[in-house]
Length: 331
Image 1 (cartoon, rainbow, N blue to C red):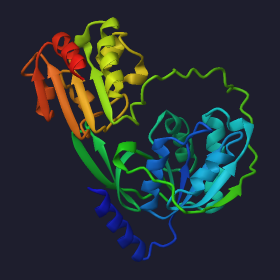
Image 2: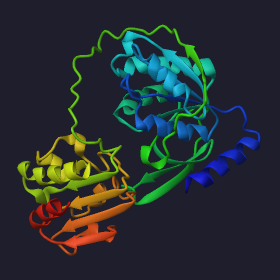
Image 3: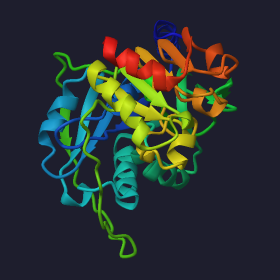
């Protein structure tokens, strides 16, 4: 269902008497930048009711100001506290529950990510609600759509929970943008209990010389056919010329060719770039679940019967070790 139709449905349900719905969006950020998954979550939340955003962390005033300017946001609940410097689920869940109680939110929404997967289940079970994960469309305030069977079928269902807890797929909602909006910024001062059994130890953030998979307009992915970690350099070189991100199948990750943060598929990341180039990828349904929403798909594989060609817009039957160097040279 396209965004225009979903917006029309949202308008219909609001005018049908469901005027007192409110959504609480939990913002994921790095102090200097808000995540694109959160911007998509704000768009989804706007389809339901008034949007309140929770921004937490030390010295994150600039992020709170930025969020207050985003179209559709009515209020920003600002928890400037050093305990939120690291995404510890036990602490974040307390904050989210306190904010939900304060604004009597009917929906709690976050973008699908490792961040939301850590605390949202705790929030849902405390509220005696089900966690509805990876939502693709909001059809009404209590009716949602998500993928099942590795993305081969869509399920539409109605929630009966008093408070709906959702995570939404980033690629299914247009990211919200800043505007002339000026939402109220309300400081939050709630008591956060200590968890003696949970302590932050270390966070390792890989340095990125290329765009992230979720932000890149072009993604080049490799499969097990690349045969080694060293051969992935063929894709890195092409990616640098195209300004693209590099991804991989689970088979390539399991083989140790690349780090698991590059995995695309059912158990990895879901991407929808303008151009997706699949190199040496057979096209297993688990991988297709993570990239089939791409605008244009190009497949390079020496096997003419590879399933990837069934979803590709353009296909090249050729040995990747010949095709990729020639493509790189011609760019």
